[in-house]
Picture: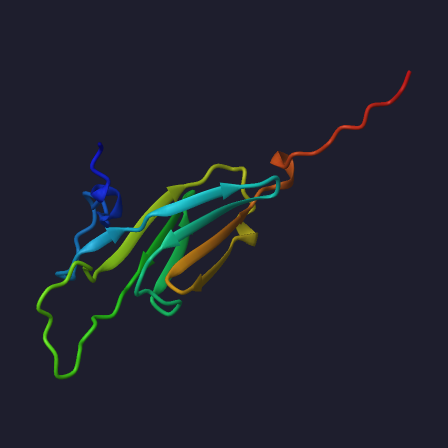
Length: 134
């Protein structure tokens, strides 16, 4: 029987050689689901503790970057005895090709899930070709 606990843990984000972190806290790579239909590509990123004010999405040189800052959780009059859930920030990046209409990308944050819609450009959308008789 395979060990499935690895799939439940947050994966640390890969640090780039050019960037140095200024915060002494973990940065996680959020797990994502990517779904495609005829007109769009959808990315759903799980980022518990993040809200729309702390999320930053950028598109530069064909790289779509997601970063989220998560506030520390403090409990009044309580101390944490044991915790399995780690608090940290999130970072993930995706390389896009020319198949997407960059001006129409939309994003929404709800209940710790970031939803990004990447509309396909007209040139790559699936279309039906009519057949003429004769």
